Length: 101
Image (tube, rainbow, N blue to C red; front, side, top):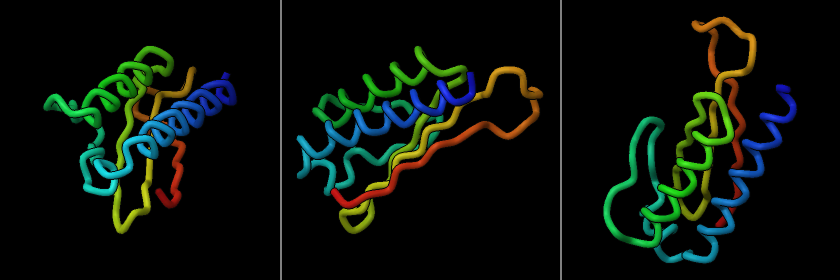
């Protein structure tokens, strides 16, 4: 199950990356920057993309959440979730994607 969750997390990261590349100006401008446990706000394409992404993470991963940081046209997308069967106080599982926009 853990491999399936990691595969889902990575797939969701690439989905957001595709959306960011399609909206490169807002992405480079930092409009996709979002922390864990932060809800996107506003009515830009970036905030709509982020809201869809966060909803998808929550729907497909146990306690799924994500964060995005863009610095100097390099984006780091990190997804975290709770692996099945691990202790409640265990650190969440994570997958990160770092690439040039």
